[in-house]
Length: 261
Image (cartoon, rainbow, N blue to C red):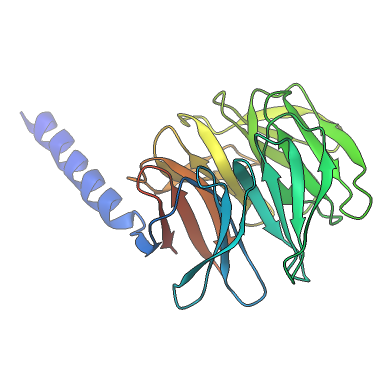
């Protein structure tokens, strides 16, 4: 009887502190169409890819929305450079589109295999996840030259590079993989249901990753493999950005962007 009481007491404490310890999210944008990628420009404005709307939307710091580009087929990953030029992966078109800071658009590289998430490398090249071919491809944004930097992955959809040059790749097959400079793969993220497109570097040894299958955001230590739940109840979570020490999450099921610290 006493042991049962102690077990129940511990369970109640866990549930109570687990609830209070979980980040509370706040909705900052609505009426989006399958938001898949999130990036920020120099003014702190948010750029979001509308996957099912075939468009890119800018959300000002006052919360106003403006379509900055339309007609791109299934836009997925998005990044912005120091000049406020925008780069977007077209999942169905198999190309990378550049939209400069005055609105001119051009394809800078093509011939991909369902490119999904994209990220900046430490040398200012684009890292592109080739979902259907299981590769990570680097792209020189000036010349369009491409190079395979990782392969033999299972449906890679998101990538980030650590300060030491290592890659961490989220895969829709269920894996989260750390790839060092020698090309050695180490599996991380035990407890993930299905890692999603959103993955960001938080520090030298920490990455935050969307768990699409669980509707959650998890923080992973790449050295130890330890995983911590940051936020949940994010049905259809796909997009993730980390900007000024805040996390931004795009959810497909309700077309919203949520933020938490």
